[in-house]
Image (cartoon, rainbow, N blue to C red; front, side, top):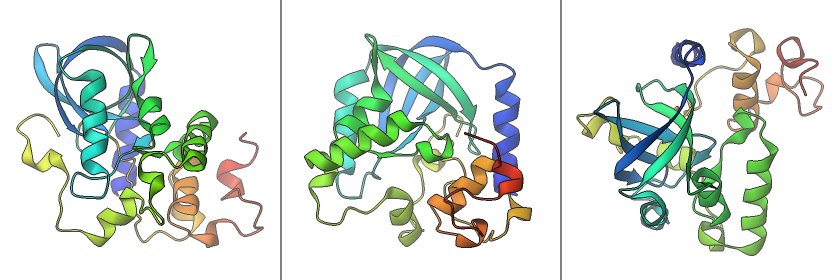
Length: 217
């Protein structure tokens, strides 16, 4: 149900996706901003990345990095979707630089592009890993979605803010195990690559649910 709701939100925004300029009024963590949009404080979750939570290793560094780049600045936002909390999901740039990609380049976020099959983000993370930048200096860094699963009592900032609650794209692994339960190829890829649900890849070619994803590059 959550995945379906998230999908419907994406579809709803798709018809009115926009690029606009807004002022950053607060940096909540390494991948979430509070912006002034149409005169209202609005949450924005940065697309294609997932930064460590604030109480997780490198969470403070990730937020400090984002503060340095965008705090109190005018940024350009390319909207991608709306998440299950009602937040805008978007690509953020300042002075012509992609902030989403810069967080990855600095080793202060994990790429979340498998959901969108964006190879640029995969390459940026790989480069940071090889250089052991930021969180990759750790021997065994833990992905934020795995950390959240082990710390269910730690709730996202959206529940502690008065503004309207990045798409974590329904990031928590649910109980779905079969292709018939998938709402889209993107969701199937998420469950295969992030949740390790091997039943979605019967022929073990790395591509889940041929009926949904067959022929997709």
